Length: 290
Image (cartoon, rainbow, N blue to C red; front, side):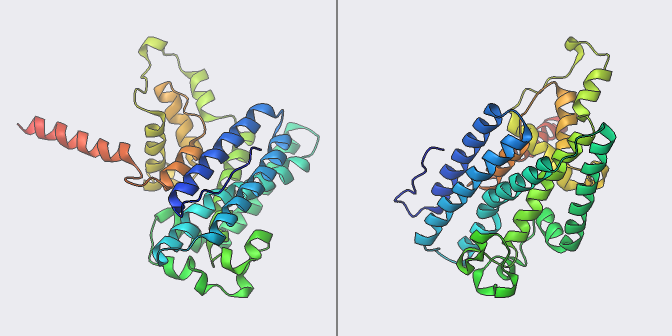
């Protein structure tokens, strides 16, 4: 991996954006160059370990302006990187121990892993629900280092440094990593919904609806529908929602998680498409009233 130099600037947002861009570029390169999930997971894990170390190097020399900025780092910025490391570690373990057998045996193996992850979600559902609801009333308690007790330090060695973790930052990162792993395993168990829909549809290309906005706009919509609980009461994974929208609107948006990472650190609105959608609807209703 090409060396990532910590900039002289003390701007946390600027550095994290540059590091995130580098991470996405390198992960994409690994995805293209590797032949299977095992190779991808191994190389991506070592990449993310290097990325996390760069983040820590910057963190050591950086002084937070206030507690709000510290919360942003441990609740939003660090998990964007740590969850990828955890995900690829889990993916490697999953692929390395995958049975060589029938399709049913493999499916059973994936289901057992999903059940184990469901136990972790259930054990930490207070954190998971807090994250999914997008609330902040416990931020000061959960994402400030001053509230960390030694007994809460996670196993991952970079987080054994009490200055580099908080009571819930690691758990949040792990939950997000497990979300991604569960989505991957569900895709292995069941063919992507988009493929099934495309195979079953009898419409010709000229009769299909085509998405004419940006790909990131469709991903915003998918996440909003999932967060609202508008589809299956919010159960399932956002990947399923994306797959359906892709099939319905004849578009391929790529990896939605990377767009979601970008949404988390947008400086202005995190969801400009949804904001514009409301404005456009209001404008249309106003014109109808006239």
